[in-house]
Amino acid sequence: MMKIKDIGEFGLIDRIARETKDKAVLVSIGDDAAVIKTNKGLQVLTTDCLVEGDHFRREWLTPKQIGMKAIEINVSDVAAMGGYPKYVLVSLALPKDLNVEFVEELYNGMWKACDKYNIDIIGGNMTHCDSIVISITLTGEVDNRNLSLRSGAKTGDFIFVSGYLGNGKAGLRLFQENLKGFEEVKKRYLEPKAQLKFASKVAPYINSMEDVSDGLASEIKHICNESKCGAIIYKDKIPILDEVRGVARKLGDDENDYALFGGEDFELVYTISKDKLENINGFLVGEITKNKEIKLVSHGKEKIITGNGYDHFTSGI
Amino acid sequence: MMKIKDIGEFGLIDRIARETKDKAVLVSIGDDAAVIKTNKGLQVLTTDCLVEGDHFRREWLTPKQIGMKAIEINVSDVAAMGGYPKYVLVSLALPKDLNVEFVEELYNGMWKACDKYNIDIIGGNMTHCDSIVISITLTGEVDNRNLSLRSGAKTGDFIFVSGYLGNGKAGLRLFQENLKGFEEVKKRYLEPKAQLKFASKVAPYINSMEDVSDGLASEIKHICNESKCGAIIYKDKIPILDEVRGVARKLGDDENDYALFGGEDFELVYTISKDKLENINGFLVGEITKNKEIKLVSHGKEKIITGNGYDHFTSGI
Image (cartoon, rainbow over all chains, first blue to last red; front, top):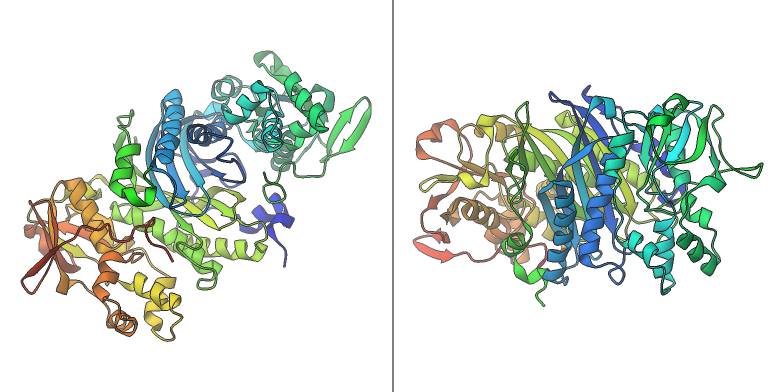
C-alpha cells in the first residue's frame, strides 16, 4: 500500500478534499487560509502546526521563541490572503514531565507575538503526547478588494518576493551542523517574522499571493496548480543574503536549493500584471507562463522543476 | 521544577490566561468554547485534539471511527455552549510511513460526521510526527438566548445530565483488558455521539452547561469554579447502564468511578433553577450549593471530592 510520504501533497489533497455544502465558503482546502462570507465581510481561518523534532528542537529554540514562531507562522498565512489577524486558539499536546515553566514561557512567547499584532488568544486545549505538538488556529478578516488567492495568477504576470529567501534552511543547517557565527541567519531562523504590513500594502494590486513557508519552488507550484498556468523562475535573481551564501559555501550546499527547496522563510511570493508594477515593492524572481511547466532559468539554460520543494514527509530535521 | 502533570488544570490556566484586549471577546479560555460578538450574533470557536496512545489505539478503532470521533468531540463542545456547528479546520500530524488509505478513511469518517451535522471541512494542515495527532478546530453560531456558560450556575440549581455516564471509561477498560462481549458499551466507546439536539432543547432554560468529556466530577468542578459555588452529587442517582455495571463487576472496578472520574462520555451536564424544571428532560444527579466544596452523598454519608477526575497528565491508556 502507498505511504503518505510517497504520494505528494496534491495527490493527498485530491483524495481527501470535497466540495463544500455551504455557499458562504468562498475558499476551502488548497489556499493559505479558508475564506467565509459573513454579514460583515470576509472571515479567514487558518491552522498551522509546529512539531518537536520536525520543526524545532528544544536545544535550539527557547520556549518563548517557539511560542512566538507558532503565532508568526499563522499570521503569515493570514497576511498571504491579504487579511489581518484577529483571534487565536491554541491546541497543545505536551509530554507529562515537561516543566510548568516551559509552558509558561511558551505562552509568554505566544502572547508577545499576539501583543505585537494586537490580537488575543481566546481558547485552547491541552493534552498529552510524547512529542510537543503546537497546533494554532488563527481567524482574521480581509477586505474584499484585498483578498489574495493562489488561484488568481495570469499569464504574463511578473512573480515577486517580499524579501530574502533561504534563511530558514540556512539557519536549520547551522544548528544541525552545530556551527558558530552567522548570527544574522540564526536570528532569522529562530525568530521569523510574518510580513503582515508588506502584504496589506501590495494586496490591492496583485493577482495572487502566498507565503513562502515550504520553499519558493513549492509555493510557485501551488500558485501554478491553482491558477492553471506555469512559471519561469530567474535563478540568478532570487534574493539571497550574503551570510546565507556563506553558510552554503561553508557546508558545501547550494544556496539556491535553500531558497527553492528549503522552508520557513515566511516571506511572500505574489504575482502582478505589468501595468501595476509601479504600485509595489519587492524582488522580481520570475514570470507566469501559459505552458504549465515550472522552469528554472540561468544564463540561457533552463531546467524543469519537478520536485515538491520541502516536503514534510520526505525530509525532516 | 514543577512538572505539568503535578500542577493541575486550574493552576496551569491561571499561569497562561490573560485578559483579552478585544471587547468583542465575551468568553475566552476556561469554557467549552470561546464566544465572540459579531455583527450577525455570536460566533463560538473551539479546538480539541485526539492523540494516538492517549485517546485511541489503532488496534481498537478503525481510521473511520477515529475521524468520526474527532468531529463528534468538537461538536459536543459547541453543543455545550447552546450553539450549532458550522466549519471545521483539521490539523494533522502523521507518521511518514502511514498508509494513504488510512488518511483517506480518517477523512471519510470526518466527512461522515460532518454530513450528519450538515457542516464542512474548510481547511487544514498536514505535517509529520511519530504519533498521530488530530487537532480539530470547529466554529459555530449561538443565539443569544441559548448561550450556555459554565459560569451561570446559581445556588439551589438542580444538576442534570443528559444520559448514561461511564460508558467511555468502561469501553476503554474492555479494550485494555481485551475482554469479549459487552457490545453496547464497546460501540458507545468507539462511536460516541455529541448531544447537539438535546442541548438546543434545554439551552433556553438552563443556567449553566458543559459536556462530560473528562468525568462528571471534573465537569461539575469546572462549573463550580467558574460560578463560584459548590455542589452535592447524589451518588446513587448517577445514571449508569447495566452493561457498564457488568464491566465494573467483571474487572473489580467501581462503576461510579467510571462515571465520576472516567472520560469521553460526551453527555451534557447542566444546572437549572427549580421553577424551570418542567421544561427539560434528563437525569437529576445533584444540586448547586453556596458552600464551595463538591460533596458526593450516598445513604446519608458524604465525601468531599478533591481530585480532578480524569487528568490527561496523570493517566493515560
